[in-house]
Image (cartoon, rainbow, N blue to C red; front, side, top):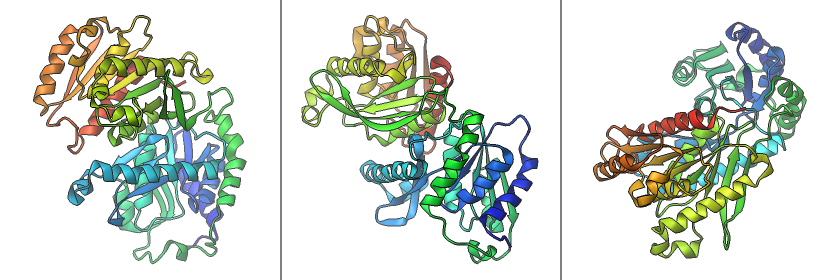
Length: 439
C-alpha cells in the first residue's frame, strides 16, 4: 500500500528513472485532480516541467456515459468513428457536444493553471501520471491527446492498476509503468492509507510551485512568445467576424482556416485538423467568413471574390497583432473556402507562404490560379470523382510549387474511418515543412 499520493509519486519516480534517457526532454502531465500530487513528485525527482492535461469525454447525447471521443486543450480532438457510426450521430449533434465540452476544457485549464500557458509538448517525451487506473478511460484519452499535441513519446505512469487495463493502455502509450497490478482491483483508493480528495486549490498551488522548474527547461521560458487560446472579433472592414484563435508558445507560424459553404468556425472537421496543427506547434485561427444575415443569402456563400476579400482583411488583422510579428501565415481551405484561399493568395503583395485545400474547389478561383505563389497542397478523396477531376485540371494551371494527394476510398467530407486523420497528417507535414518548426 501507499501512505498517500506523495509516497506513491516518490516510489513511481524511482521506477521512472530507468525509463527516461539522459538526452530525453521530459514533460510530466498530471491528470486533475488526484494525479497532480503524484505527478508533482515525479516532476521534482526528474527535474522536469509539470503541467496538467485537461481532457473531457464527448458523450453520446442520448447515452452520455457512452463516449464517442474526447477533446483537450489546443483544439485537440479524438474521435471514435465506430461509435459515431453505430449511434448514427449527425455532425450537428457531435458539434454541439464538442462545443460545450471544449468550453469546459478551457474553463478547467484556466481555473487550475491561471494565466500560465500550457507547456509545449512538441518533440518531447510526455509522462502522463494519475493516482491509479481502474477502467483506464481517462488515461487512454490523455495519452492520445498528449500525442496529438506533438509529443514524440508518451509514457503512462501510475502507482496501481488492473492487469487487463494496464495491458490495454499499451495500445496508446509507448510505455506503461505501473508499480502494482492486483488481480482484483476493487478500487484505487483501497491501495492508499490516505486517499483524501485533492482540491482545485491544491492542484493550482502545486502547479505554481513547479512553475520555476518548467521555466528552466524552456517550456514556459520568458524568451518564448506566450501562448493564447481565446475567442476574438476580427475587424474585416464594415463587419466584425468572430473567431477562435489558438497559438502554442513559440509557434512556428499561424494557419488561417477558410470554411466551405454551409459551414462555420465550429466545423468539427476543421477543428480536428486545427488541433493536430496546434500539437505540431502551429497557431490556428478559425473564423466565420460571413455574418448570420449575410450567410442567409446563398449568393454570398458562393461569392468567392467577397470571401477572398474577407480573408485578405483577416490576414491583415493578424499581421497587425504584436505577438504575430514575423510569423509566416498559411491558409487551410475546405470546399468553396479553398477557392477563396487561393484567390486571396493570388493577390498582389500576398505574403501567404503555404495553402492546403481539403476537398476543395480550386476551379472556382478561375483565372487567379496562375498568380498563386504560395506552395499549394490539394487533398482529395479517391471516391470523390468529380472534385478529383476538377483538382487535377486546376493543378495544371498553377505555376507555384504544388502537390495533389489522393486519400484512397475517401468521399467528399472524409467521413470514412481514418480519412480525416490522413488529411490532418498531410496538412501538418505540409505546413511545418513550409512555415517552419516551432521556435
